[in-house]
Image (cartoon, rainbow, N blue to C red; front, side, top):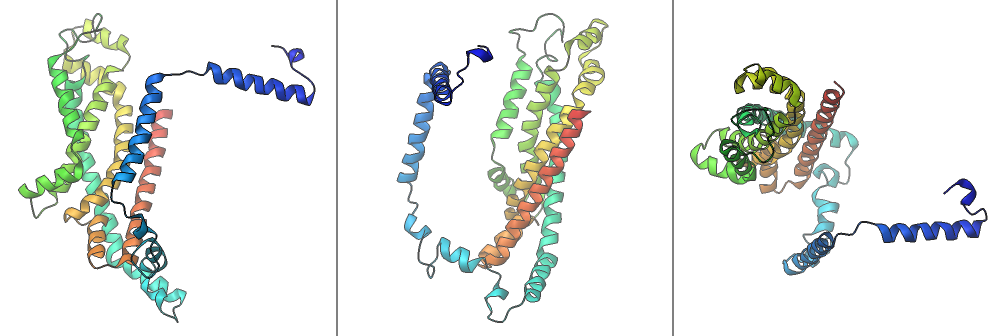
Length: 311
């Protein structure tokens, strides 16, 4: 359609646009399976909300009773502001004291926990990646057509990675707590094992996606699978590996705040203490501090990944 075919008057343009919208609506892609699954999901969500004993009345209870209104109007208010003669200086002193006694130590502990776990997870992912890559575990790596070919070793390692990432970190931490109580290892290993399974699968997929021409050249020259990995696959996939590590690090920081409830010094550890003492105002500050830490980790991770993509 050219510009001269389009209607010039306002009513004609409106009818023309309505007709185009109607034709686009009729020609939109339709998938019956997607529609049915979407409808089932909505029905299941509504059924779950109705079937669970959520006690909606308690959520919107009178401000004098435990509920959302009292929590927002009273519980999370700093206790110094509940005094009739409070000043902003009193609020600042209370906040600085809280950060000095709990906040900075909790933040530092969370960062140490997340960094140690990601270091172990990255090392585990590097060990799993060559075994998970189907292009490296076949009898003739990168030579000939690989369509339909499967390696029993890569299938087993991929299943192992799936099992590792399927384990919830908090549940795994509780299991490890029975073996390694009194130390930081349960939280570190819980995060490391979960993320190693994710990174092992992602690293293996990265090795499969590297340009095949230089890899075939190395293979034709007699390079063994270890040589293909060290001199071909790893250098080409290294930047993507780093991007995956930075991506998982921001998630690991968020998970480390929760795993502190196992007894490791972190934001979650002090949040559990404040909850048991019903100091909801201090708990709210720690929650905000944890959210700020996650946002900073996300911003740093996003910036580093963008730099890697540009490079």
